[in-house]
Length: 440
Image: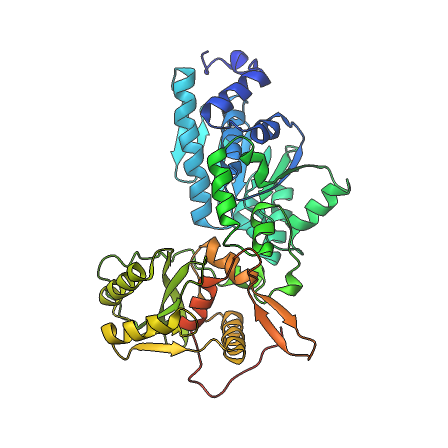
């Protein structure tokens, strides 16, 4: 088929598109169902690693190729995520050319998009309402819609809706269920009640597990390390009530710095700023987590995250190596449980910089409230590391029968917020006497 021939390009059937999508990588039933759905408005709430970014990139590409002057705008929460989506588009672009046996003529091919000779355009943009408003689109796709902070998300949603008016375009929303009270949750709820025009696709992890035994095994293993809340949100399409958690998603996402590039710790790392470690040692099935931060005045930035599920000898070897490569000023460890023998060994090997923290209920409360205050003040910067953000979000507030507030990471299936507690130790303010409560 000669793509330069407009009439032939427009005669391509839906079945052919689905076949090419399958050959490019949309092989699961739920991916094909999304592609078959010709609704003007579509909404997908999905589990992690379900392959919807691949599906959206393939759908974008095929519609741009087989329609004249068809403009598609993808909007993502950050530059990194918009670059990632465009990487999937480029991957699909090379595959479809091989399948068709010919090159697809382009006028422009940039980091953020491509313009086809037959007038179609495909763009992948970061979170910026004013940029989106500059386009007249046939379709807007808001990818990872659940991650957008509340205010910014609504601004993007309204701006993109405005860009559809001139061409009577459509919209697709796709994302994981990160909290209620956002535009994504509102549209999801309305779609369930049939109060809007979005066709609804709920893709639980079991949908992929039916066709992918390897994925099924990986998720079942994850269940051992995640709390019920985390697992429900990450894999079962469950929007969690933010009122029961200590660190709401909006707060955490406001502290994310997309420019942070985590270091491996495997080679020497020199920093002009002091470095601090927090280490939460494994308890039975949990992982040992090591979080490193730099400190600039009263501000902290996460620069390394290590998770280990190995014997204690291997863990100790790694910690000694990380100490040599990063030369932290302090290494804070939980001295309760498995931390007791670790403390003795590390003190002998490394010295007085190894500092124990007893995880009693009052100390844990102090660590959590201090860290909450620091997030509120914008004094901790996080990388775009959803595992860490999910763990922080899993920490719940609860009140005992005696009226005492407690901060817990549920361990219902062996899960535990190891990285979150390691971070709380790395940034701890226990030496300060001006302890400040916060209203949460």
